[in-house]
Length: 361
Image (cartoon, rainbow, N blue to C red; front, side, top):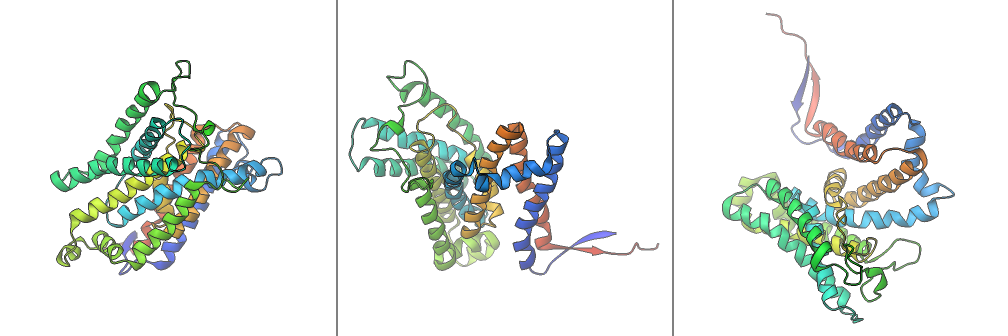
């Protein structure tokens, strides 16, 4: 018989090994899936992971896109990881991302066509506050009425999507857009356009904010007493209460940080790559960032690497659809496999396999 036996302490070897093993298993099973779709599996895997960086025809365009795609994923995942370390499960970062974009864009458009250098920083602050306020809804409901933050934050995503549809179709619609939904194009407004800081690198202010968030999260979680309180709350809630940690404050802090960072990600995206508020602005970054957070082991520097890897699957997936005709749903499934196999192999971090003989009656 095969039995899972709980380890006295989590295995450090498996903690570091499971992300790599999850990537390998994703490649293997993903290759089988691509073969079942009638596509060459090795070519599909190569197109996703190799061609965006080294293909002679596409690499010059794809490499800068790596930072463009990774920036919001890393920024959102850093915020989520702080809450996850405390056992606070914010699943609604996509809604906070959308509201941050809408709020920041609304503040900017209220001053159109100003060219003030203070306008873009004001929009960033507004985006962060919008995401923070949206995250405070599940935070306050949890602390005051004991509701489940998973359900509340997730349901608020659909509310945010309807607010986005309303904004792009009515109160933020471009008055010069001939009736079509969508706001003014921020790419045509130099004062607020989040352009590349270094040409042909993809480095914009959203990427800079993501790197700052990585460093800030490391300092908070590893060098600050509040980070210790967050980790203690997640690992030993009773011990945290006995030591005087205020659970209400931890919930508000963690959800506030994740909401603010998600809102900033939305603002940087709407003023940069997306360019405008539109009905289909919601890109799924808030959900994909959950995979990034866990693939990075909730460690800031691990999340940085995981964000780059996930961005690579986005870009490579688009290339695979273009060059091999793979359906978009198969690429989304391929990305989802990463989280599935990570959670599956993560069992061995806390458990070991034991082979025991069958007992004779």
